[in-house]
Image 1 (cartoon, rainbow, N blue to C red):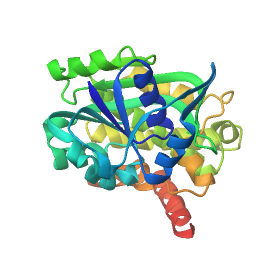
Image 2 (spheres, rainbow, N blue to C red; image 1 turned 120 degrees about the horizontal axis):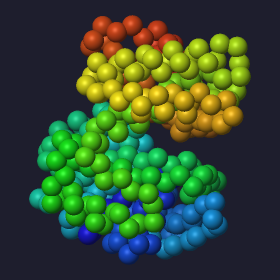
Image 3 (cartoon, rainbow, N blue to C red; image 1 turned 180 degrees about the vertical axis):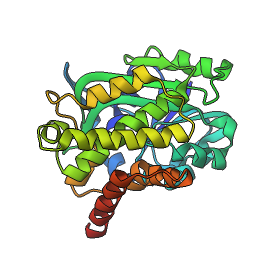
Image 4 (cartoon, rainbow, N blue to C red; image 1 turned 60 degrees about the vertical axis):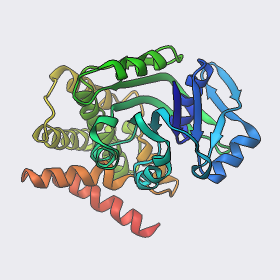
Length: 304
């Protein structure tokens, strides 16, 4: 299977590297700066088990040739419009596109551009970041990759994807209910991003502060009410596990949006928080805590 990994940051770099190491035909689509960095130093993975370096196949938008069987999109959500332009020449009649982005807005955007039949569901669970020299740093052993048809019908095309991904040295989950997995990932990451950005700290600091637990639970409840109104079929055991994970004061957690914010980078405010507020408005739901978070991150973006 010919695979194009659109992006070679922490997510794309890690999972793309594992696919390449498993013998898959993987090409990384990257911008000029990242292209030069990877050409010079290789793709470096720093994991709990040690350091690995590989020489990846690289391409830039101007040099893409031929169609790909699978395109995995791993850029920040605010870069999606440009990436759609970049990957367009690589999309053929049989191409499937698997976005691994935060939120859910990107699914409709990709479907509108390339067709509903081309977009499948995907998400990952990994604690990883890029180091100062572009190395991919996996901070914990967690490395899960979920995928499946958005309508739950995993046909022969999806079976081929599973066959390519299942032996790539990561924990793969071929799901027949990927939409619920996506809703639940959004519940986790948006709660985490909201409270960390609003309080400017990790969950341990928040939970050990006066009112911190109430803040976290309040944000969680607002988000759960929004996604349920939007079609999430609540799985009580799953949502309880998410809240339990977030509420553990012994485990400090942060989100990628918060880590980007404290470094002064652009953040996925509209995709992670803003879209929830638009959906809440559609159902006349009161979300005062999410509104406070949204104002907070908008001010940050104005001040950058």
